[in-house]
Every structure is written in C-alpha cells, then in structure tokens.
Length: 295
Image 1 (cartoon, rainbow, N blue to C red):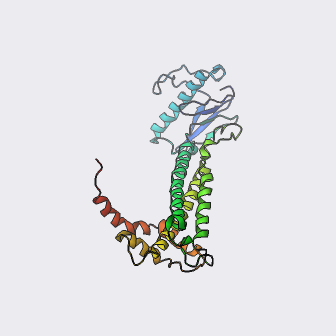
Image 2 (cartoon, rainbow, N blue to C red):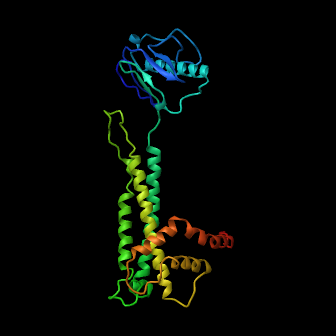
Image 3 (cartoon, rainbow, N blue to C red):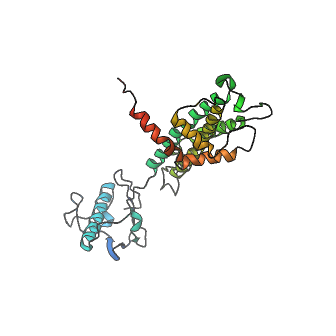
C-alpha cells in the first residue's frame, strides 16, 4: 500500500506492502493473502466481487481499507472452512513474505492497566499519610499526654522516635512514587510505538507503595499497643483487646530500647497474611450490625 503506514482509529492495523506473495498460517495451512484476489468490496464482508483493485492502483487510504477488509474476509472464510473461529491473539498469526507485508491488528496498549496502577498507588498512599499523622499524636507528649516517644526513661531510651522517622520517610517516599507513570510517553521503535503507557513502571511503583503502607500501619499498630500500656489496668473494647493480644503474641511491650525492625517485620506479616483482619472481623460485623442508620 505504497510504503505507507495506516493507523486506523478503529482497529489499529499497520500495513506495509510492496510486490510480494504473502501467506498466513491458519490451522497449520498456508493461506494466500497477497497480492489481492477479487473477493469482496468494503461494503460487506460476506459479499464476493471482482472489484478488488490491483496493487498498482491502490493510491489512498480508502483503497487501503478496502484491501484490509478483503484480507479479513479471506481469513474469516478460511477459518470457517477449517473450523477455526479465530486466532488466540495477533502474535499467533505468522505472515510470510519477501518484501514486507505486515498486518497487525493487536489492541495491546497498556494505558488502562497503567492508569489503574497509578490510581491504586495514589489512593493507598493516603492510608499511610493518615496513619503517620495518628502516629505523631501518639509519640508527641504535647498531644498524647503520655511519656515522650512512648517509653519510660526518656533521654536514655529513644522509644518510638526512630520508628516515627521511618514511617515519615516511607510516607515521603510514597509521595514521589505516587506520581503517575502513565502520564509519560517516549516514542520508540522507529516511531511505531509512538505512545507508550509506562505500565510496567506503574505496576512496580504500585507494589512498592503498598509495601511501604503496610510497614507504616505496622509501626502505628505497635505504637498504639504501646500507648495502651500506660493506661493499664484500664481496658479498651473487646475487639481492640483481641488485636492487642495478637500483636503481643509477636512483639512484647517496649520497656527499654531494643532492635525494632524485628517487631515491625512481625506485625507487618500479621497485616499481609490477613491474620489481623481475621482477628478483628467478628467484632466489626457486630459493630456494623448495631449502627444507627443516618437520617
């Protein structure tokens, strides 16, 4: 088709043609698809006609569309004859020719999953941002009226001070990672891939954001359980006491400084494994069952 590329807004075919005999492999059999044979006109994919133009007369995009329709009809007819309903995907179709006839109708752009991953990263980032602000209210004695950084012997022990720094750093990292990758594009492959979704990067960033959020929430959960230690022997609700017991089964109360990443890893595992949700879920069901409906 006169050494030009046709990008249809409907089905995105890319066509390059000169003078070559081209076949396509269908169900193990080579089917002749080029040069044109008088099979149909564009008006109907089922009608057969002798109006197909010779290769030298194809001069515009309308003519190119005619030939694309003719090609599709031939492949469809052959598929019906052999009982093959179609190809699993475009890459399963092999086109053979010497001078470069290629038809690619794959709609494989990654923009939609890329945007979904970007939206996921943006939404989940907020969970960590809120969690870190609650953590600040726990470790700040001006706001909590508890010992600074939730530990006795302040000055000698730093308590949750560095843990809060870790949470703040992860939240700040998420703010960078939440920048959408799908807004970017760089043309590649000789301008054939002229709009690139950056979907792979969006997916990797989303996974990293989720992992960061899990650790921030784990730090807040440790701090909340530690804050309750300063209110004993008072008790909180039955559901929250169940959560405290679960956390204490993995991490002891903080009486003096020790390596904290072990406790953070253990509580993060409670979150990622679903054990935390399973522990609190029965209490949440009762809670929602007794809620007063809004008027």
